[in-house]
Length: 495
Image (tube, rainbow, N blue to C red):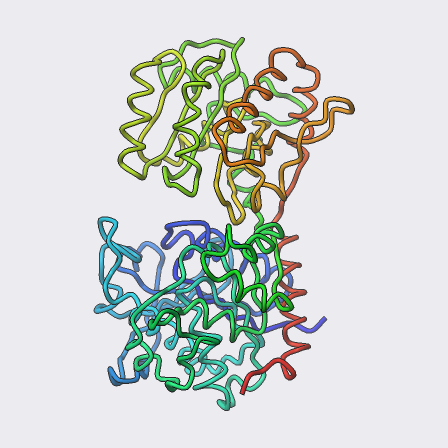
């Protein structure tokens, strides 16, 4: 098969800058695509948290002119590096005015007032960089609203540019809740002509919605799990764009994210007290005892330990959990929580920990080593998300033999199969209704299985540890989608 030229544009990339799952994908997918033989380049902003020395970034010769419509021409520097453990080039767009700040998108919870200009600038810089490098992409892969301008620009400003005459576009939706909504004056910065400011393209309630425009103009769109691709066509999960996405369902796909098993595998994990694997689980018992010790819980082997790791945000089901927690505290269980987020939740769960010191413990913040230790030492892992485009922790949990208890939404529904006590099949426990009763009832089911059906529980653990969700599989899915885009591009291209 012929190799493809692939340009991936993302506002965050592991290990350089991260606020969510987008960064994990943008750091892992390019390496997996490169391993398939493609020429892959990655572009991201050079936020000032990205350490040039640490990552050996080298300046590219000359500066980059970026036409900013009514703002005139802006100039950027470009640094070049590589994704760690690969030869995949990463280009960093350097502009002190836009990216020389403490945060990626916000500071102290307040979004930057010029995020529209910042990411329109970044999207245009991606296009200008491709020209500067004489790199003719077969596909430009944009991600979320930050780079959703790229498919729009491909169909307008750059429609007749010889560098992009054969370039198709893919827009991946990692989280539809964030859409890039701004005042209409941003049209003058985008500079594509006000004829595109209409309800079928960019206009929404007299402002512009960059993600909406990207969905309309991209040759294909995809969500990060098959279930999430279905869900975003419905009012419950569509955040106001469900009608538009449904209308574009002919070009909508779902590809489940992979995970990095070099980092998340109990057989080789350097951050856990003892390694273990499917043929020898003795190390897991050590991990459990050490986790209980670290959280100052009684070191009991005869009680199921439930772990939670994640942002304390509404999306993650913390309101459900707070309503159900008193029921959970009546069960013979221990629970450890690692997370930070909404202040009421931090205070609430700290209060629960002080009321039930032998049953519930929490660490407010994020520590990577502790996240690994919770995955390794827990018996069960709780993810009561209201929506979850893909989810990674439930996949990590499977590998560590820590059975997930999840709400059946998005990638959680795609990866977790309910326990069937008759034939001992499945890999976890899931509930459907977003209610405290459904959550506590399913936890009770998992706990009862631990106490009263140990053969079934142990078999589930083995089932879980055999599961694999590799990036190689995801990359093959993207490769097929890129080829589909290239094949259908001529008939799909908007003029």
